[in-house]
Every structure is written in C-alpha cells, then in structure tokens.
Image 1 (tube, one colour):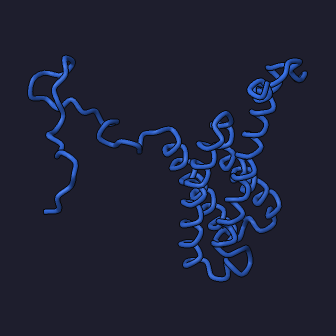
Image 2 (tube, one colour; image 1 turned 180 degrees about the horizontal axis):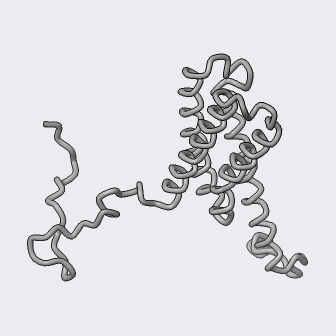
Length: 177
C-alpha cells in the first residue's frame, strides 16, 4: 500500500438530515467535480456535436435519395452544428474561463468522435480536414469568444466608474515631499 501524507477518508459522517448509519453523501458529493456546470455543459455539448456529425455523415453518405437536396441537407446540418457549438458561449458569457474550459471539453469530445468516424468513412480527412486541424480551429474559435467576452466585460465594468483622471497627486509623489 502506498502511504500518503493525508489522513484516510473514514467515510461520510451522519448529519441531522440522515438517520444514523445511513450514508449522508449525495450523488453530487460522490461525483465531485463531474456535477459542475462547466463540465456538464461541455459533456452534453460534446455529445450533441458528435451526434450531429454522425447523423450528417450518415445522411450524406448512406441515403442517396437526399442527393438532390444536398444544399438544404448541408445547411440544416451546419445550422445545428453551429447552434450546438454556441451553447458554452451563451451559457458562460459572463465567465470567460468557464466558457473556454467547457467549450474545449466539448470540442475535444467532438474531435475524438470525428477521429473515430474517419475509420468508418474513408477519405473523410482528405475531403474535410484532419482531426488536429479541427481541434486547432475549435480552440481558436472558443479562445476568441472567451477573449471577446473578457474584454467586453472589462469595457462594461470600466463604464461604471468615472473616466476623468484624478485631480490630486498620486500617493507616490507624497512620499517624496
């Protein structure tokens, strides 16, 4: 057994809400950080992006009767993909770090699904892009959105205070007198 400097967890302590002997840890406590809004949003968004990607690949490659409606089919898939991509941006507009973390988790899940789908759809990476290029593009998009939200928040916060410079001398010059 590997010894750690921390005391071993003795298990949940009973609280007044739980009867004696019953575990007081709820599902949220047992899952820990998995229940945070940032991770949940990233996981759900990533799953939705993978779902839209797989459905659009199946519809484009395995349903020949939709070939005459390719423009409408692709437009619907692009629209759904963009709307699902914007979920972390809209949800965490006031928290740029949460937005970026959630978006990158979602995009990583999408890239893994995209990479796996390349095994089933030959020439996918030659026609569209490689998984690395897709990951890089998503990182840039979510990074730009996070920076725009951060700078926009700072600009709105700066508008709350006076813009005119102070009329008195600063504290640095007072020490010299």
